[in-house]
Length: 487
Image 1 (tube, rainbow, N blue to C red):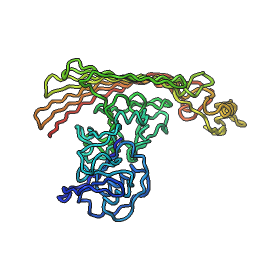
Image 2: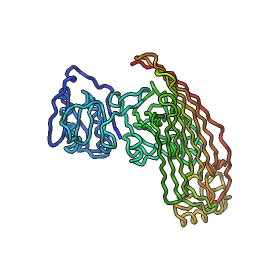
Image 3: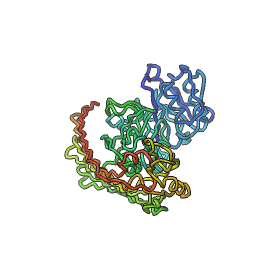
Image 4: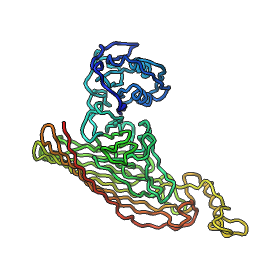
């Protein structure tokens, strides 16, 4: 994982163009520009290294990049008026090295014992320990991550697999300032603003440069296209861009942006197949195949993922296994290059899931709750009760524990079917001017299966059936964007 933080007010002065010679201090490789000699007041308490370096970047107006595997270390913090180079030494400790690759960009990594100290090209350390460039599209064009004035966290496919990131919400464990909420206050409301960056609502999810959009999501299943399983496979990377991105990605990206980039077809004939087995009848399969039909002209890549797993919560009334998994995801990409200055990338992707939803356990009841004079929730003296067996079934639920549900569910089986087409056409008009058109259409279809009664929507009930099932109206969206880039 690569973490980059930078303050937009960072400036490069004439003195910043000079670079001091490398030197060894306390066993740590450190190379710093002479411009960092101006003292800065720092106030960074001991904390996670990634968070501490974010604070350092904001206070020193310097972009900081952390090599994979180091972001979870602890920092001793720093306080007082110090030169940025000295403050950075205290933050990272003697076991890590800090190397400036340009006047306002520093890379934090393990010391390179095989070479002397000195500036390197714009690069970051990858999972295999080698130095390689990281290219992102955080500003709607391909750029090196070190050269953009944004706070960006990037996960390549290797990092995603290493950290067992199965869905977008798993990023909470590794990305500072991102939060995810998987439940809702109103059973009829969509899962809106489920992701937050820097505590702000409005975090857009883009797939292949197109927003995934929003839809109403089945209560209990906890599924949302782009957030659930079946998205993070065979990828170039996942980019998390923090802060408002309305200029390039629309007004809904107030908190930030998560961009998922699938792997595009290449000129190599290659592929892979991976299978996993586990308890509860778990079966997971993933594959990808890349076929260059006509080298440099017509390239095709197909990939897919599926998982089936029995649930670990049983409904004692219906016999269903809740908290199960059953989904299929697929994508096919075709790149056409009829000429050297024009190429077209067409992508078809889809997702289908079929689950029983999650187990809903009643933990508290108030039998005397009054809906109207003489009308209560449970049996009380001289009143009409909606649920006469409420107390008896509640005691059964407490005896059954948290892995069994007594009574009917709040939701029946949940089905989701999403698919979309994306077309990205790029024309290099000249060496310094590129025209790019992005067109996409997406369709969402879901089987809504929850209790429609005025009570059932807000009170967890026991032993009272009444679920209704209906396919929701298709929610469709069309996106088209024309970009003109100068070099």
